[in-house]
Length: 450
Image 1 (tube, one colour):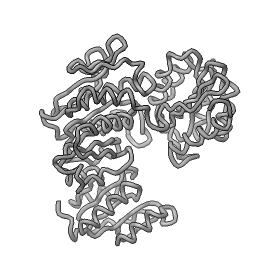
Image 2 (cartoon, one colour):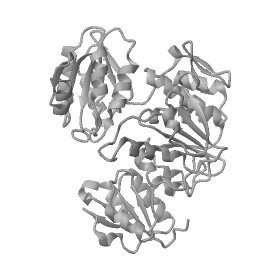
Image 3 (cartoon, helix red, strand yellow):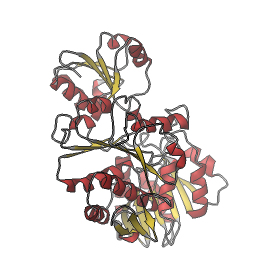
Image 4 (cartoon, one colour):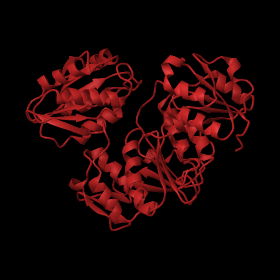
């Protein structure tokens, strides 16, 4: 793709959008940036984009800004816009940052998607593949935009690009080909953006497009419905369940195609859902040529990512766990399931921005394993209505500090206070990470062993 002197537009000046601006300007393109936010809200990103020579059109999406363009690159957080549809009708290519990056990457791409577990699995695969002795890029939705791999040693033929991809990033992928593509799971999420669960699942399944039989489509063995999302493409390989190539056998994570054996109680990450994540990562790493001994060492040594089933501390016999990344109901349910072997019950802290899914699965899990629910944020009234009449004691909090204080008062020795919000964070916090940080500070403020 020739970019020099092309008229390009970047819609959405978040981290990936700014990365695209840098890339396009480095390749000689004329760049126009469009964002709903104004310069003061964008802050340093707007200053850098302008310093790079981009023309900024901020505070809205005027139709005139979308004229006379050769290429439009859309950031993942940008909602559907009529202006983008009209540009496509005029023949202007409209692509995602991921799609643009893939056209300048010669290395094999490992793409990880799914509703839950993406970041953990992506990081695990990256740690395992670091033993291959080749340049490696790990990023995507996890952190560094994929566009940063283009033009690096990792992005060249001898390298390896490992990326976490969200459904938003996959919406405008057309030519990207993943050598190993993983779909970990699909549960209801982002139904405030997608017309149906089926539309959301179809966006996830785009990760398999353009695969050939020499590529691999990695799927969970216990979700046969997901196989229906793949029409053609890569060789299907299964993990977990009763017949996955990598699965749990008598309490031992076992690769049936290699000597890999790791007892579950030796895994460095906690929770039943993380056992499935470990199986998926181990399978992908083996397909990429990583030795079983190196895979096993990473599984034993990796302690997890921040705000993902992260043990914060213990106070008066009560454990506190930060799973702020559980931003949907399915993830929150998985968090509770992962603690099902605990002696006590769960005191759950949940709430934030509702994402359009049903809370009934959460209600059922808490009826079985929960002692109390502390709700906060915009979704608090909705959660209260769902849990009205439940045997689970219900409290509302106005802040994270108050939520932790209330949860502590409700918990008994042996219980677990779990932050698994089941909602987005943007009503009270800038991100799930900031929300988790507030939780951890509140827990450490309790004293004791935390």
